[in-house]
Length: 269
Image 1 (spheres, rainbow, N blue to C red):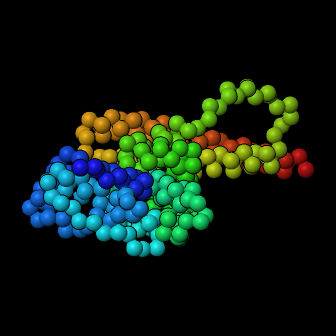
Image 2 (cartoon, rainbow, N blue to C red; image 1 turned 90 degrees about the horizontal axis):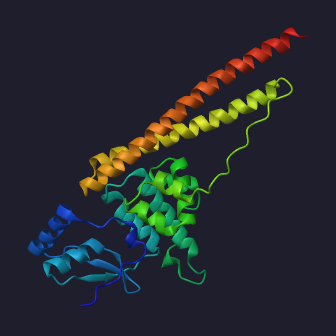
């Protein structure tokens, strides 16, 4: 018997394994398939786990052809709310669905994949539940490597680790030349604003990594793989928190410097 192929959008979601898969197989063996497997263009759009469980239980599966307007919206609506996914996974799924829809030929019908309400980063972040910073990171990964984005969506790799893989190698910066003149208040304020932006970004990264850690700690699955990923995420979180603390110190020092030069400029008048 030839196994049916999974639609690309169906493969974004994690496959059931271990005790979870065994429970689904046993339930189908005892009670039959309660929800038909949804097909689109000869591929399984929703129900990949149910299909595999039917084969394992030697139960003939039932099928239903997709009849909606948008397969992207359908896949998101039936999967996002019933799975335990980290913010990074949810953001990656949103980004990948949108990228897949954008890649479809213009002459294909609406139900080929277009998803209303996902055109901006804010839209996708609102639906994924992740921060805009996390969604922006997921969008970059999906654009650079759909395959890597799929791995994030399935929980095979964390979003921060995937984003690091697509970062271009940065050249070693040249040492800064000492300033010949005293800094102006305007330049100090501009540098302070820049540091505040970097500090906010560090805060966002730390928060999202904390969410990732919480998800891995509560999710079931391969204990050994989860423990390894937890160790990696904890190390990344420590690095980001250290960077955040450094930015906070620099911001405080910069504020003192701005106030010093303001007083000095005022006294020179």
